[in-house]
Length: 255
Image 1 (cartoon, rainbow, N blue to C red):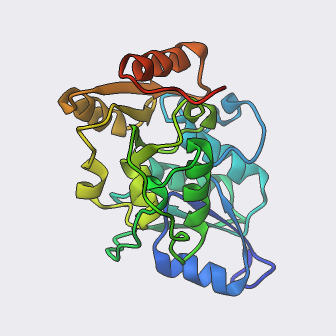
Image 2 (cartoon, rainbow, N blue to C red):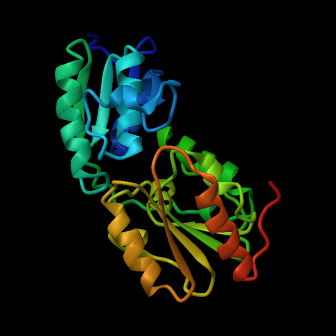
């Protein structure tokens, strides 16, 4: 395993490691892989010998990526900004991958970088892609003008981004995804924030602890819909989103 961090190092990140670590990787020129994303195209059950099926699809994706990419290091955030399941996943990966240094982190960063992407006019798939890509960088997102929201998406970036395709371009993003752009994943007040004046879908991955908060906030919201999905988004979930938006007087984006 490599102990020197340079441009030949292959590093994986899980969740949002502290900005100091992202800066170190950025400065070194290391190749960084966001293991939360479905990089390796394998059946999700490939993770089942190592993680129970009741773990969320994101962490099962992490295991599949980590076991295939031949990484030198993995920085996996296990603090309040991620989840307890990530802590146990770090232990499992350390045992499974003796040639990879697995480094648990706890991101308690408190510097606000702002959330212009969450509030600008942009197709929601592109917006969420930009938010997740920014995790590998220390700089804030490029400033973007805000728009008036017609709908809201609260939650985490879904494993299957096709879930986002029906939302109008004027959808504002809330929840942990907004914390991602702000680079403060352990920000309870920001995560719980939503706009009660716009119809909002409250989403979490199935088997994620955030399903409890998503469901609770959806009940509090005057026009909220709770939704959870596992690996892929089926027609039933898409139909729920479409019906909810249309009944709320919001035009869906063309498929």
